[in-house]
Structures are given as C-alpha cells and as structure tokens.
Image (tube, rainbow, N blue to C red; front, side, top):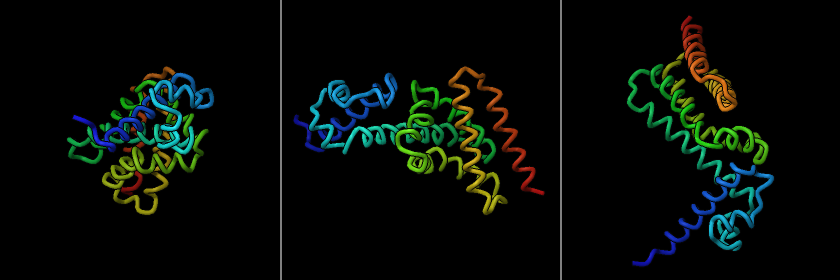
Length: 192
C-alpha cells in the first residue's frame, strides 16, 4: 500500500525536525550546518528548503515542538487535579519533569532567545507552557485582575530560572517548595 503525498511530506518534515533537534542539542545552533541536517534526516537539501525557508525556520519548528511537548506534559499531569492550587503544583512538577528531556532546557531557554529573539520565543511560550500557567493562576487567583499577565510573566520566568538551575545540578525539591511558597504568598496577598 503506497503512502499518500501528504504522509510522505509530513514524514520528511518530521525527519528534518528530528534530525535538527538531535544536532542542535549535540552541537548547538551555530555549529550545526544544513548539510549535516539533511544527511542525518536522509533527505535532499531541496527537501529541507521545500519545508523550511532556512535553518532558522527549522530551528523555530524544533522549538515549537519542544514547547508543545512541555505544555502537553503539564496538561496531562495536572488534568486529574480538581483544586486550582493542586493543579498548579502538579503542573510545576510536570514542567520540571518535561524540562529533563535531553537538551530541552538549553534549546528552549538559552538557544531559542538567542536565535529567534526574545519576542518570538515569548510568543511561542505564551501559546504553550505559559498559557497553562496563566489558566492555572486565573483559577487560583481570581482576584488578580489586571495583575494576571504580569504575575504570569514573572512566575514563568521563575520556572525557567529554576529549570536552568536544576539542569546545572541544583536539587529540584527546594525549587518546587519555593514555587508553592510563591503561589501561597500571592494567594494570601490578593485575598487581603
């Protein structure tokens, strides 16, 4: 049974994303050349440029896949929670679990802002992990009002810094406890 053109197209695109991810993790964006990517994907250079404008566009696709995987892990892990605080705590744990994937912290938090720029990286995050955080904070802190966006941004940055520290060898548990303290402190403050 032959595959449809659409299936072949998607398979080629995914092979490029997978090969790009492996090489970006192994060598970094700057040191990865497009001939290496096409060789690792087992496709032609023309196939690369059919699917992606350039190496940067492929990198963006890799980052979007990584960000989506993190958001999906958070949603899956916290879906069974029925209280907003428990949902956020479970989401925090899922975020740290998801960021343990080899190279993910460096790709999402170091390379992406450097390659794509802060605003593009923030936009990708806003549609993924930060969106789940925003929804959780809105449920837990309905009193936040106009502070919801800045609180989401600040807590998202705290999560990212924690992930970088954990990747560098810091113990995870104190960061999870600190997130709980931040959430509880915000709730107490906003209820006054």
